[in-house]
Image (cartoon, rainbow, N blue to C red; front, side):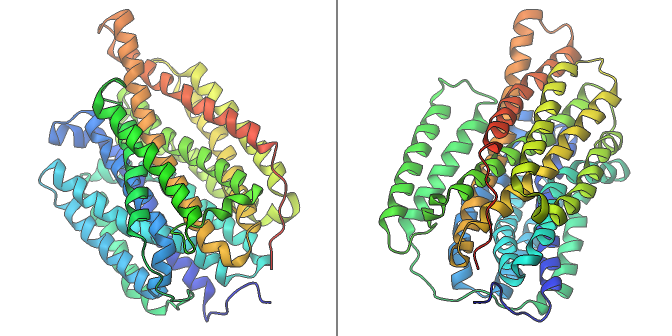
Length: 469
């Protein structure tokens, strides 16, 4: 049996899907660099401002489970054109937004487009490339996954310093139009259209479950845990998720086939992906905040300071991908998580209001080299253990959880940042605002370190899995 589908131009299809996903993932973190400007323009606090990222990720988390349905209802080309058109509408709304509400709505519409694109990229690429070519290709996919969110702040910093944050969206709009005109016409259909019955109850349960969970985490930045607006959505969200899981196991055609988690390396690889995405998005919101508000760098300088770590990640990702078959996931993830843990410890030790910036840049480099060794090996090793008929389900399950992890990472980072500031002012008063901000960022890194250590422990249980034909 053949391990892949024959299409006329697999590289072209992969390029279009990766570029579309890159634009969407760039959008995930691009506004982190503009957050201070947007907060000033619309007179809002960081707790409200973070909804631009958290809300975006939340829509992705709600939408990605649907992807397993969408690929069975619509052709690949219909989905790509639909995703690009939706992203365009959201981008235009955000670019011209007269108020924070319109900006947020535009962002959420954009997220719908990205939510269609991302899972499509995974399942299509796994279908159109033979097993022996998967390592290098998934290396590039891993690069898209990390470079999009990681380069967001750098590129956004350059855009903001030469014009205004509105141009972040105008540039994205231009790129979407190019993809729509050049990329979409050459797309071939690779999915089997079976038009399965959509289970509305599963859809509602997953929306309430993921939505309630992330909403509660994000609201913690402004309110205490005892506040009903925090714990009620959390309890309802967890209850809905439990019901969702039970329902999936009892259905003949589940919305997400959770049987994929019966494959141990898939379950562990997904857990490691979740941990890495949580940390990437925490760092992507904390470091720009620290460089701009504590060390007083401009947007462009802060963006450029994050560039060396991103360049290392860009260099390392294809190297890891092309050596994956020789080295295996076990070695890569252990080294990767060791570096991430060292980076997290260093951040906790060095961050203050007077830290020399080279120390921050150096630590980020250690952290992101670690990231480049964990994402692609965890993901490919996980997917390799699944039989081909479960790729779409595995992709939907993995993507859903990584997007929830990203939303949780952003929400927890801001919540811990706020909690750190509050505990600092209780002890020392408001006399030293820079020390207070630095303490807030440092405090948020405690969670990053805990997740890094859990990932490191998990990496010691990885076994290299061989792809099933």
